[in-house]
Amino acid sequence: MSAPGRIPVCLSIAGSDSGGGAGIQADLKAFARCGVHGTTAVTALTAQNTVAVTRVLPIDPDMVVAQIEAVAGDLGIDAVKIGMVGGVPVIEAVAAALDALPAGTPVVLDPVMIAESGGRLLQSEAEQALVALLLPRATVVTPNVPEARVLAGDRHSALDGADLARAVRAAGARNVVVTGGHRETATDVLLTEDGAVLEIPGARHPDGAAHGSGCTHSSALAAHLALGFTLQESARAARAIAADAVRHGLRALGAGPGPVNVLGVGYGDVHAVAGSGRLGAAPQPA
Image 1: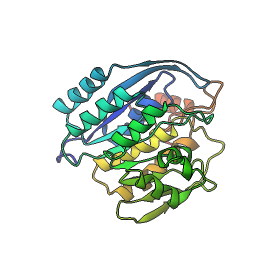
Image 2: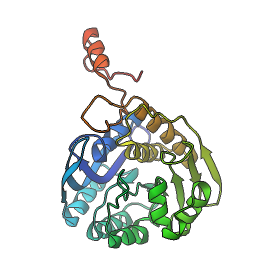
Image 3: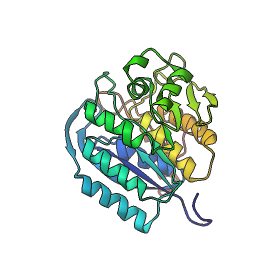
Image 4: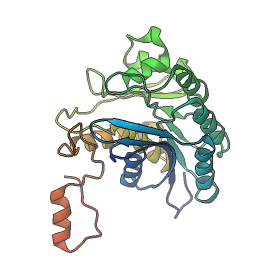
């Protein structure tokens, strides 16, 4: 937790989404929503929109480390969120950079491994490196069900809920949140390192827009850890914030699944604020 009078700083280590729906763009908006200062170490540039990813340009691992060191050396880092990491060299570089942070710095790992189509986003070598190097360094890992099954190993492909979370912990994780988006009921399951299980229920919003919901969830969790909340409190807050972002999602943007809307911004809100003469005020969620 940061010193009194200083706003906490959260670092997102992730890819850039040119469409603004996921990646560091979603992370920065979630950080702002939670009241912390967001910083970034970009691992890849992507050309994408609501329909497709058309190109990915990985960032040199040395540059990823340089970004982390620049933030840590001046601003300090109160919590880290890790998203898209790409290949083995970047994973190795991120692991080394995490070891250089002050002991006890909360690290939230959102293992971006499975596309919405079901395709694997990481090569097998990178999956193995993520499990070996990042999983044990994370304070908490936040996979959805398909990602959790990859982390746990293919022999656990039928598991769900607390059993699946235990299999992920057995693979090297400390604390695990299996998110509920791909579950029959939209309930997150938190398994702590002492074996306690907490179910975090919530409404499902099928008419919302969910692109970036995983990024938003993990970033909100990291932000709350930076603010000094417990893991259980942070997981509950992240579940609520991500669900609200989906509920207010920007369904009318683009031809594909629209981005989440964690700030609750809409066309009507902007004009209402403009009409009030308070152009600098942030619109409030409906």
